Amino acid sequence: MPYLASIFEIALFIVLPLIVYCQQCYASRKQLILNIALLYSIWFLSYAFLHELSHMFGSWITGAKISGYQLIPPFWKGDFRTAFINSIFKNETQTVVSTIMPYLRDIIFLIAGLWIFRRKKLRHHFLNGLLLTLLVFSPLYDIINNYSGFVFYSYGDFNELSKAAGVVYTNIAGTLFTVIAIAITLRIFVVYKKQIPTQKSTTR
Image (cartoon, rainbow, N blue to C red; front, top):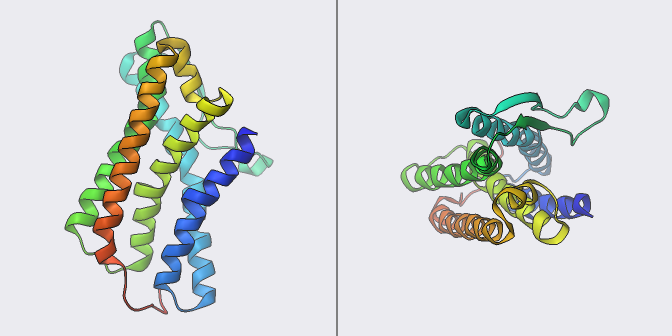
């Protein structure tokens, strides 16, 4: 069930926004499909790497020993899901910091996205789509996917966090991350509405 829920959330928070964005930018059906596929591929190949790298950074700054890691799923073996960081924690602080670091990074990415779209009028459709994918769609998906995994299935990072910090504090943290992410995303959409291309392009 967590896997099926993730597929639904990918469709809702990654694929659907990409389709909507690209439909506004590209008149050619071929270009539309090509750019959606390319942006999705970049997201897919970078998502696990950035998420696990954030866990690794959290372990490193707290002094936890990293006993093993795989930052990129072994696609060449037909495994598109397995990426991990194995850390040896000596205290709850190390566990908490390492566990929540990807979601702190998500908020930072969203803030960066808001800053960029407030101050820059980017005319390159593909670059706009890339920034939206990596700085907006992906962080929002990451937070909602992982927190909902804990709420509905007792699964994932927030489940591990609950073992160290307790269920109440985990729900407070998950709710705050979710509310902040949604609020920033909505603000970005308001700002970006002025940036939506008024004329479809036939080139990337």
